[in-house]
Image (cartoon, rainbow, N blue to C red; front, side, top):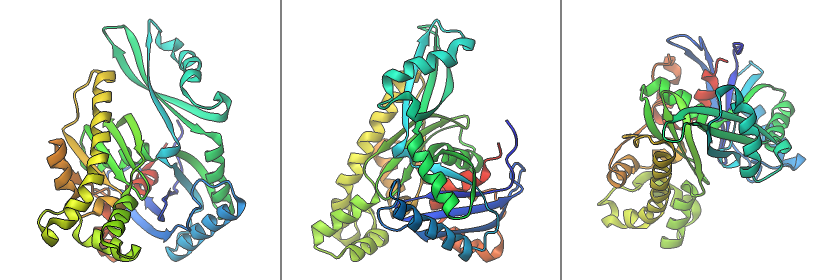
Length: 343
């Protein structure tokens, strides 16, 4: 694969668009050049509507102008909820036959015409009991890819690569943590994306349709707060036991429990399909991961070590950015991973 030129990584989220520009990618110490975020207009993510795409493009233009980003080459991530993933096994199939075998079997599992998706797969080794090649199939609707290409072009940018959020997060997490076998949970506004990395490679991915907005709405319903007040309570008190007589913990824990149930099912599925042990570590990322007490809650429920990620680790950050980076570290995991892509 050819080496990518210097570029900006762009993460399109439901609440904000984030961008990161690095130099020295591929070296031991890349350096932060510029970064920033801009509020995402309501209802524009994944929209085919031309007006919505123009609104999102305008947000990107504002972000680049405010952050003084001059590089027009960009690498973007597709929302994990738009991606299809599937474990497949191919008994008796030789390595040189695998690509064709994946293509023909994928037709049975992808819930749309095969010609309407861009497809790839990750080899996961051999199942010795069945003498079967194991792969992780990853497919993205071409329509979704075209939406983000259109937004970039409307913003005056040149997209040079597109990949999934999980792959981008995995790149930044593996580089910053060095963990070889880890569960990654990316807490977004409308979904929680779970992925498992082994030796820096994505081996499992799923999107759970519960995000941090569900926590806020639960507080609204429970205490009859305005939405913004509920958001402030969530960010200030989180899921720490004992605060406010335990009322916030009691309110939020059922939602988090539902997410953790899906995470546990995902881990069991991964173990059964890959014949691998469960990872003993969980890394948290995304804006929702900043919820006070979340890491301790997950550690207790799953019985593993859960910590907030620091994707800026081993990246040289100028002093003028230091305070901002410290406050919002984990929320830039996707954008940093995209900026670190070098081929």
